[in-house]
Image 1 (tube, rainbow, N blue to C red):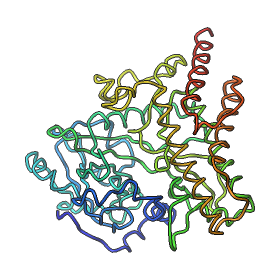
Image 2: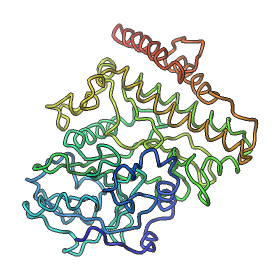
Image 3: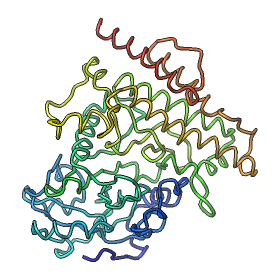
Length: 441
C-alpha cells in the first residue's frame, strides 16, 4: 500500500452528523496549535498529516501473526472495527500503522509475513484527531465500526509519540479498572475505553491502542466539545465559547463558573481524594457534553489512559479493588507508578501538581486571556475580566469542594494558580486526615 491514498471528502458523509460535527471541532478549532506543532523544527514531518490539513485517506492495516506482538486486552470483545474482528482469530492481530510511519514498519511486516487487509477487500478510512497520531477510523460503508486508533509516530515533531510496550499495557490496565468500578465513580465522569493494545515484539516501541467511541458521539441530541475548542478557531471557525455566549443571556464569567470551575473542582476532589484517580487535566483530554442547543449537561468525557495517574496508597486505604493481574505488572514502576524516566513521578504530590497546573494554566488561564482579548475587541459583552479572576474563582470552588466532599474546613481560599505548592501542602494534610480516619474506621 502506498503511504497516501486520498479519498473524496464525500466519504466523510458516511459518518453520522454528530460525529462529523465533533471531527470539525477536533480538526479546525485547535487552540494555539503553533505551541505543539513545531513543523519548522522538524521538517521531516509532512504537514499534510496534521489534522487541520489532512484529508480522509486509507489507513494502512495488516494482519500480523499474534506470536509477533505483545497484545493486551482483546480485539474481539468490543465493537472495534467489527467486520475486521470477524476475519481475526487468536493467531492474527489487526495492526494499523500511521501513514507517515509506514516506511519504519516495512521490514518488520515483511519478516513476519503480514497480510495487507486491502488485498483481502477490506478498506478502512481514517482522519486524524487533534492529537494527529490518534485517528478516527472506520470500514468503508460501515460507520457503526468507527473507532479511535492511537498509532505510533516516528517523527519528533510532538516529542515522544510512539506507543511503548509499558504504556500500551498501562492504557488497557487502567481503562479496565476504571470501567469495572464505573458505578462507584462520580456520574459526571464518562471515559473512552481502551480495551486493546499491542506492540511489535521486534520493536516494542511500535504499536497501537484501540479506543472505543461512546454512543453520545453519535447522538444528534448531544454535542461533545473538546475543551480546547472553546477557545480555538479563527476566521469562519468561531470559538465554541463565543458561540455559546452569543446564545446565552448569562455573562461570560457565569459560564466559566458553572461549567469550568465549580463542576470540575468537585469532580477533581472526588476522584483524587475518594477514588485515587488523578486526571491528565488539559484541554485535549477533557471534553464537555452539551445538549443540541448548547446547554451544559454537567458531564465530562475523559480520553487517553496513558496519561492517567493513580494514588495507589489511597486506593488501598479505601479498599478499592484491583485486578489480581494487570498487563505488564511485573514491571510495576515502569507501567503504573508514574511517568517513565521521571524520578519524582511516583509521588502523589507530583501527580497532583501536574494535573492542577495543566488545568489552571492550559484551560483556565488561557480562557481568561481569551476573554480579555475578545472583550477588548468588542466580540464578547460584559464587564472586563480582571487578571487572575478566573483562576481565583476556580480556587474558591476547590476550597468549597474539599469542605463539602470531605467535611474538612480549609479556608480562607487563596489563588491556587499563584500559590500552587502552598495548596499542595494543604491538600497533603487533608489527604493524611482522610486516610487516618479511614484506617481508624
